[in-house]
Amino acid sequence: MHGTRIPLAKPDSRAVTIRLARDPNDLMLVTAIRSAVYLAEQDCPFEEEFDGNDMVAAHFIGFVGNEPAGCLRVRFFGDFAKVERLAVRHQYRRSRVSFKLVQASVDYVKRKGFRKIYGQAQDRLVDFWAHFGAKPLGHNRKITFSDFSYTEMLLEIEPGPDAITLDSDPYVIIRPEGDWDRPGVLDASAGRAVTSPLRDLALADR
Image (cartoon, rainbow, N blue to C red; front, side, top):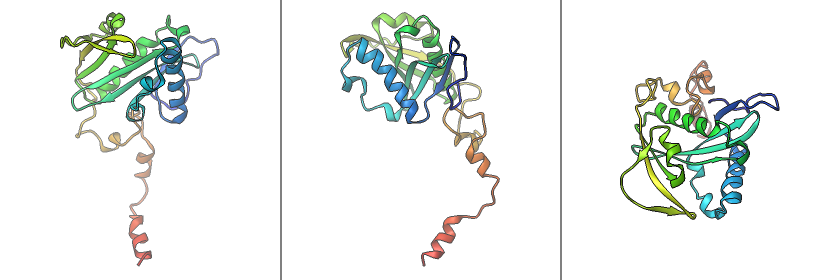
C-alpha cells in the first residue's frame, strides 16, 4: 500500500496495487478519475463533486498495472473516520480495485487507532459495503444529494495491534503519512549533532 512511485509492471499487467496520494501530481490523478466517474458518467455538478474537502483528506489511488484505475477519500473526525468518494473508471469495474481500495483504507484507519468508520452509500451499493462488515446506521434519516439517495453506514473495527498512540516511537509519529514502518528523512537527521542553528541566527541579529 505504501510508497511514492507508480508500481512497476508490464503494460499488460492486471496486478492491482494501492498507494496513498502524496503530491500534486497524485491529486491530479484523483481529480481525473473522479471527473471521469462523477462528472462525466453521473452528470454531477463540478462544485458538488469538488466540495472543498480534498485538501483536508487522505486519498488512495488504485492502479491496474501502471494505469490509475480508481480512488477513494478518507476524512477524520473526533471518534470516527469517514470513507467516501470511491470512484473506479468504467473499464476497471470487473477488477478487484474497488475492494482493494476499501480494504487499504480500513487497514489505514485501524493503524490510526480509530474504532468506527462512517460512510454514506448510494442505496444500490449497500450490499457492496456490507461485504466489509458495514451496516446501516439505523438513524432512519433520508439522505439525498447530487441526484442520488444514500444510506448511512457504520463499520465498527478494532484498532490494529500496531496502532499509533502517544506511546508509539516518536520517530514513527513524524514519518510520512501511511509509511510508518520505514525510517524517514527525519530519522536520518537524528544522526547529526544537535547545533540549535536558530541560536546562532539570534546572535547574528543583535
